Image 1 (cartoon, helix red, strand yellow):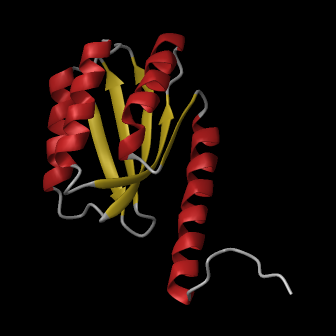
Image 2 (spheres, helix red, strand yellow):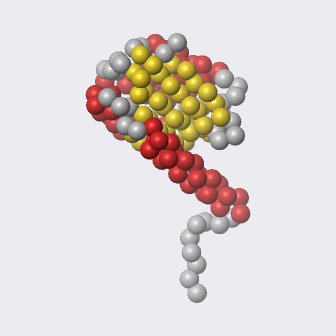
Length: 146
C-alpha cells in the first residue's frame, strides 16, 4: 500500500508516509482509515513524508482532498503539519496545498529535508504544550508592568 501511517499517542503525532504512485482514492481511503482509527488522538500533529512519491496531484484533486479534510474534521483534528516533498513539482503543489488547507491545521509548512520538518514540528508541539500549560495555570503569557 502506497500510504501507511503510525500513531505516536504519547507525542500526539501521526507519522504518514506515501511511496510511489499515489492515487486520489488511496488518499481518500487513508482519511477514512484515520477517521475510524480508535488510536488517533483528539488533536494530533502530522508528519507527512512524500519524499518517495513519484506522482503529482492535479489542482482539482487537491480540492477534493480539502473536502475530505472538511468532512473528517469532527472526528480528526490536526495541529501542526510538516510535509516533506523533495521533488520541485511536488514541493510546489504542497505549498499550494498549504494555502488551500490552512484552516484545517494550526500551522503547516512544507520542507525538502526531513530533519528540518521534524525540528519544525517539534517546535510547534512545544508551543502548543506551553500554551496548554499556561491555560491550565491561568497564565496568559503576557508580562505584567509595575
